[in-house]
Image (cartoon, rainbow, N blue to C red; front, side, top):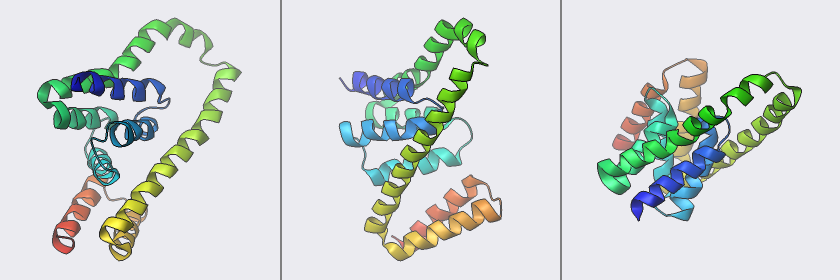
Length: 176
């Protein structure tokens, strides 16, 4: 049963998540946190942070981790397949249609409408992560990490990998 649940959670998230990995995160969060209860919001936010720090597409990294955590190696394979299957199926089925209408004004308008929706979903997820962090580790530590992360990422151009590793080190020293 767990393999079907892994497949369903990742397949539906990725088939409905227009715009790639970041667009699927709120949908995947609903599936693994709210629907199946495999992770808390805190744990999911840590998976997202780790996935962002590693090279490659975030959706496949998260699928591999979630699948392995819930179903071992076979669970990881099932979740990875379910993550890439929607794109594979749609690309094969709709390649000719896509090539014919890629410059269409209606397609461009659809993209312009969907982007703000994805931004709002990501904003809601970020708010939930922030609120959970304040509850779990306190406002002071959360503010320190947010400000330090912003400065390092946006002002100094530090790699997200080093920022995540620094946050992990900070947590190990000050929060354990």
